[in-house]
Length: 179
Image (cartoon, rainbow, N blue to C red):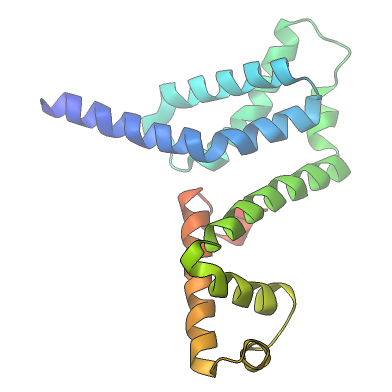
Protein backbone atom coordinates (compact mmCIF):
# COMPACT_ATOMS: atom_id res chain seq x y z
CA UNK A 1 0.00 0.00 0.00
CA UNK A 2 1.42 3.37 -0.94
CA UNK A 3 1.79 6.19 1.58
CA UNK A 4 -0.92 8.23 -0.22
CA UNK A 5 -3.38 5.32 0.08
CA UNK A 6 -2.48 4.89 3.74
CA UNK A 7 -3.08 8.59 4.46
CA UNK A 8 -6.35 8.50 2.51
CA UNK A 9 -7.64 5.45 4.36
CA UNK A 10 -6.72 7.01 7.74
CA UNK A 11 -8.56 10.21 6.75
CA UNK A 12 -11.60 8.17 5.66
CA UNK A 13 -11.55 6.20 8.92
CA UNK A 14 -11.44 9.40 11.03
CA UNK A 15 -14.18 11.01 8.94
CA UNK A 16 -16.35 7.90 9.31
CA UNK A 17 -15.84 7.97 13.09
CA UNK A 18 -16.86 11.64 13.21
CA UNK A 19 -19.86 10.99 10.98
CA UNK A 20 -20.99 8.12 13.21
CA UNK A 21 -20.41 10.12 16.38
CA UNK A 22 -22.17 13.32 15.29
CA UNK A 23 -24.79 12.58 12.64
CA UNK A 24 -27.69 11.71 14.93
CA UNK A 25 -27.18 14.77 17.16
CA UNK A 26 -26.84 17.09 14.16
CA UNK A 27 -29.90 15.58 12.47
CA UNK A 28 -31.87 15.96 15.69
CA UNK A 29 -30.82 19.60 15.99
CA UNK A 30 -31.81 20.38 12.38
CA UNK A 31 -35.06 18.40 12.45
CA UNK A 32 -36.18 19.87 15.76
CA UNK A 33 -35.64 23.35 14.36
CA UNK A 34 -37.38 22.93 10.99
CA UNK A 35 -39.75 20.00 11.57
CA UNK A 36 -39.32 18.38 8.15
CA UNK A 37 -37.60 14.98 8.01
CA UNK A 38 -36.60 15.11 4.32
CA UNK A 39 -35.27 18.66 4.49
CA UNK A 40 -33.34 17.81 7.67
CA UNK A 41 -31.74 14.83 5.87
CA UNK A 42 -30.82 17.03 2.89
CA UNK A 43 -29.28 19.69 5.12
CA UNK A 44 -27.28 17.13 7.12
CA UNK A 45 -26.04 15.51 3.92
CA UNK A 46 -24.79 18.87 2.67
CA UNK A 47 -23.15 19.69 6.03
CA UNK A 48 -21.27 16.38 6.03
CA UNK A 49 -20.26 16.76 2.37
CA UNK A 50 -18.76 20.13 3.22
CA UNK A 51 -16.99 18.61 6.21
CA UNK A 52 -15.55 15.88 3.98
CA UNK A 53 -14.20 18.45 1.53
CA UNK A 54 -12.53 20.50 4.28
CA UNK A 55 -11.79 17.66 6.69
CA UNK A 56 -8.02 18.15 6.79
CA UNK A 57 -8.48 21.83 7.76
CA UNK A 58 -10.96 21.20 10.59
CA UNK A 59 -9.55 21.02 14.12
CA UNK A 60 -12.78 20.31 16.03
CA UNK A 61 -15.33 18.52 13.81
CA UNK A 62 -18.19 18.84 16.32
CA UNK A 63 -17.90 22.61 16.60
CA UNK A 64 -17.34 22.96 12.87
CA UNK A 65 -20.47 20.93 12.11
CA UNK A 66 -22.75 23.12 14.21
CA UNK A 67 -21.32 26.28 12.66
CA UNK A 68 -21.74 24.82 9.18
CA UNK A 69 -25.30 23.76 10.04
CA UNK A 70 -26.38 27.41 10.26
CA UNK A 71 -24.73 28.33 6.96
CA UNK A 72 -26.16 25.32 5.14
CA UNK A 73 -29.66 25.98 6.51
CA UNK A 74 -29.48 29.58 5.27
CA UNK A 75 -28.17 28.49 1.85
CA UNK A 76 -30.70 25.69 1.60
CA UNK A 77 -33.73 27.89 2.20
CA UNK A 78 -32.42 30.73 0.03
CA UNK A 79 -31.92 28.27 -2.86
CA UNK A 80 -35.46 26.95 -2.40
CA UNK A 81 -36.85 30.47 -2.35
CA UNK A 82 -38.50 29.73 0.99
CA UNK A 83 -39.27 33.16 2.36
CA UNK A 84 -41.79 31.64 4.78
CA UNK A 85 -38.99 30.39 7.04
CA UNK A 86 -36.92 32.84 9.06
CA UNK A 87 -33.82 30.73 9.70
CA UNK A 88 -32.18 33.44 11.80
CA UNK A 89 -35.08 33.47 14.25
CA UNK A 90 -35.13 29.66 14.33
CA UNK A 91 -31.43 29.49 15.19
CA UNK A 92 -31.29 32.58 17.41
CA UNK A 93 -34.40 31.97 19.51
CA UNK A 94 -32.84 31.53 22.96
CA UNK A 95 -35.68 29.47 24.39
CA UNK A 96 -35.74 27.13 21.38
CA UNK A 97 -31.97 26.75 21.44
CA UNK A 98 -32.11 25.90 25.14
CA UNK A 99 -34.85 23.32 24.70
CA UNK A 100 -33.18 21.71 21.72
CA UNK A 101 -29.73 21.90 23.27
CA UNK A 102 -31.08 20.33 26.43
CA UNK A 103 -32.77 17.58 24.46
CA UNK A 104 -29.62 16.81 22.47
CA UNK A 105 -27.55 16.86 25.65
CA UNK A 106 -30.02 14.58 27.38
CA UNK A 107 -29.77 12.06 24.53
CA UNK A 108 -25.97 12.11 24.64
CA UNK A 109 -26.01 11.61 28.41
CA UNK A 110 -28.53 8.79 28.10
CA UNK A 111 -26.26 7.03 25.59
CA UNK A 112 -23.30 7.53 27.92
CA UNK A 113 -25.28 6.16 30.87
CA UNK A 114 -26.20 3.10 28.81
CA UNK A 115 -22.50 2.63 28.05
CA UNK A 116 -21.88 2.29 31.79
CA UNK A 117 -24.56 -0.37 32.14
CA UNK A 118 -23.24 -3.66 30.88
CA UNK A 119 -23.72 -7.15 32.29
CA UNK A 120 -20.49 -6.85 34.26
CA UNK A 121 -21.03 -3.16 35.07
CA UNK A 122 -24.44 -3.22 36.75
CA UNK A 123 -23.01 -2.35 40.16
CA UNK A 124 -21.06 0.59 38.68
CA UNK A 125 -24.26 1.81 37.02
CA UNK A 126 -26.19 1.58 40.31
CA UNK A 127 -23.37 3.38 42.13
CA UNK A 128 -23.30 6.12 39.51
CA UNK A 129 -27.06 6.58 39.84
CA UNK A 130 -26.97 6.68 43.62
CA UNK A 131 -24.06 9.12 43.84
CA UNK A 132 -24.28 11.32 40.73
CA UNK A 133 -28.03 11.33 40.16
CA UNK A 134 -29.55 10.91 43.63
CA UNK A 135 -26.87 12.69 45.68
CA UNK A 136 -25.81 9.83 47.94
CA UNK A 137 -22.40 10.15 49.55
CA UNK A 138 -19.89 7.35 48.99
CA UNK A 139 -20.50 6.16 52.56
CA UNK A 140 -24.29 6.23 52.13
CA UNK A 141 -24.06 4.32 48.84
CA UNK A 142 -21.85 1.70 50.51
CA UNK A 143 -24.32 1.25 53.37
CA UNK A 144 -27.22 1.04 50.95
CA UNK A 145 -25.52 -1.65 48.83
CA UNK A 146 -23.79 -3.31 51.79
CA UNK A 147 -20.30 -2.92 50.33
CA UNK A 148 -17.14 -1.29 51.64
CA UNK A 149 -16.11 2.31 51.07
CA UNK A 150 -13.19 1.12 48.90
CA UNK A 151 -15.54 -0.94 46.74
CA UNK A 152 -17.84 2.06 46.33
CA UNK A 153 -15.01 4.40 45.42
CA UNK A 154 -13.54 1.90 42.96
CA UNK A 155 -16.91 1.16 41.32
CA UNK A 156 -17.84 4.83 41.05
CA UNK A 157 -14.47 5.73 39.55
CA UNK A 158 -14.85 2.87 37.08
CA UNK A 159 -18.31 4.15 36.08
CA UNK A 160 -17.00 7.70 35.66
CA UNK A 161 -14.15 6.46 33.46
CA UNK A 162 -16.64 4.60 31.25
CA UNK A 163 -18.86 7.67 31.04
CA UNK A 164 -15.98 10.00 30.17
CA UNK A 165 -14.55 7.54 27.62
CA UNK A 166 -17.94 7.34 25.92
CA UNK A 167 -18.31 11.13 25.84
CA UNK A 168 -14.73 11.54 24.57
CA UNK A 169 -15.45 9.07 21.78
CA UNK A 170 -18.37 11.33 20.78
CA UNK A 171 -16.08 14.36 20.62
CA UNK A 172 -17.10 15.81 23.98
CA UNK A 173 -14.01 16.82 25.90
CA UNK A 174 -15.44 19.47 28.21
CA UNK A 175 -18.68 20.67 29.74
CA UNK A 176 -18.87 23.42 27.11
CA UNK A 177 -18.83 20.77 24.36
CA UNK A 178 -21.74 19.02 26.02
CA UNK A 179 -23.82 22.17 26.29
